[in-house]
Image 1 (spheres, helix red, strand yellow):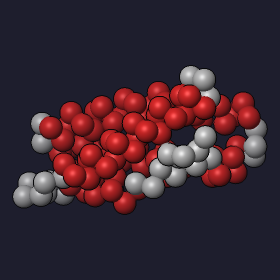
Image 2 (image 1 turned 135 degrees about the horizontal axis):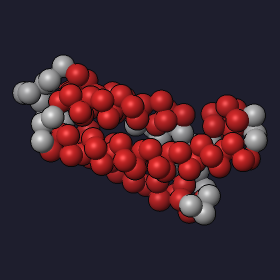
Image 3 (image 1 turned 30 degrees about the horizontal axis):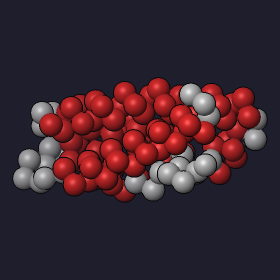
Image 4 (image 1 turned 60 degrees about the horizontal axis):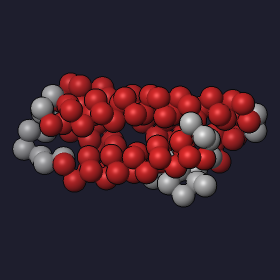
Length: 113
């Protein structure tokens, strides 16, 4: 438990309300799963606007669950925001998607989702 994510800030926000913590975990799984797929597709298509929007939407949740990739996610976001056509963002995207995939699998297992 909590190898690829941390619940400290989640517990603090939820005031240790286990039902609320479960709701936040469910929301993480639902929302971040969709957002990371949208982000991967946008980067593959060099759709800067959608890459920016997906990364920007993910930031608060990624930060709350402390995946340790916020700086990498911000780089992907800025790639889209500033349309950095000369930059290859694939390494940062890989870091983000790998961390998210691990956290999703672990949260699903930890919370029986």
